[in-house]
Length: 316
Length: 294
View 1 (cartoon, rainbow over the protein chains, first blue to last red):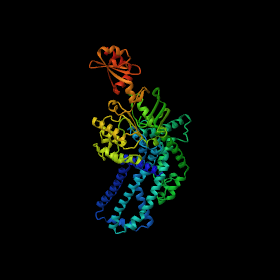
View 2 (cartoon, rainbow over the protein chains, first blue to last red):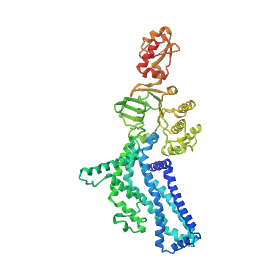
View 3 (cartoon, chains in turn blue, red):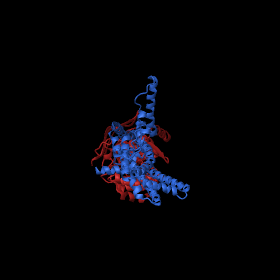
């Protein structure tokens, strides 16, 4: 048991070694951009507001707000800043999974990997876990660093304005809760997207070339075929359209599972409060949806098929 | 010693082509076996079946395991190098060493580093920046550092210079090989391996043409350098092959078929390359050689 955990960990580190740019430098790069953007805004602000009187007044005004409101503003701002990371992360994961069981077949290094005493099930599993856990963890790490940098900049302004940065910024930011909810939210998001991930790995395991294109073309083709069926059936659209189902799933999974926006009541009904992005019950409520479980079932079938193809795969 | 590889009626078909046509094979422990054949003869197909990399029909047992379903367990005791350098191009040398150490229980880092010291490969180098020969050197160093019971080498020295090839085969023989290990080599550079082989297998069109140990091979096949006045007499004894070198006629005989050869000229041990040409060369070339000789 212990040795298979070690094997799994070694394989997952391998994935990061293979794609350091996507998994390490991209999140850090976004963090630097976000911080630079904040600094740029403040520099422009300082130019317009020569004596900094208005800026510092605004900071003091913020310091006088009730605690609840400060909390909503600071933590909401930090959560919003992390969305740049998370949307790019999904894109990176989708491309990573599409190549995950294809690239080593293409460059023939599969022959080296298969010369090691590692089962094909373990290989597939390590790549899936990399996408579901390790990559979100790396992105979350970069997000945390960015949060800290933004709060440090904020603290300088707080000190200049004479308010207490600890009391008025760091405490309202409620970083431990924000980060914990985000971490759980990312896990729930991965579970929600599991059938999409498994579909990409399945295509990657057998596609002779361009796995990402094949993974998109098959549902798109079926979807168009279903759609054109409506032409001969009196223009009644079929109730279930595989392409739309997949898009909807992807779309509702792009925001991390902790963003709990329900559009069914109309946009004007959304109330901006903490439960939108920082609530444990909201995160776990997703786990109780039947769509979630159906997704796991589909993912299990697709992954079993991917393992089967991987077992037979060589360099040709 | 116990048998390392046992195959009965091993077959594999690609479409209508029979890549392996019912091969029977028995390779015991402690041998160095050369699997020699022309391109497309089924060498790689046979190796892939043995290594659990492709499906097959018939019976096959490697170290008592079924390669197709137990590849991961089998690879604890089997190492292989495929015909060209296949190390992942993105990795750095030290990463590949660390991965192998973590994933292979029988890998020795010290041994690997000792082998690499003799090369100009740096630990920080990326594999994609190494030359083809250096990648092969690295791969050989990795494989030689694993305590395996069966080592499969598919064209191991392709793209290496003569110095390294000589050193590799002498390392293989002196440091790596012992009676508990078996080495299976395929190569086109037959001259390089013929003095280290204990067994020889010729394969052609998916069938075994020859399968015996080297002593038997040299006992059975002889090369006869015929005196000019005896050429016709030698030709009447059904030689397997005839060639002309500096005006001397050289025949290759199977002693089982032909006797009383000593009277006709000098007898030599044939090289594997000549034996290969004699047994595998297509009829057309042989006829034209005979015509040219006549």
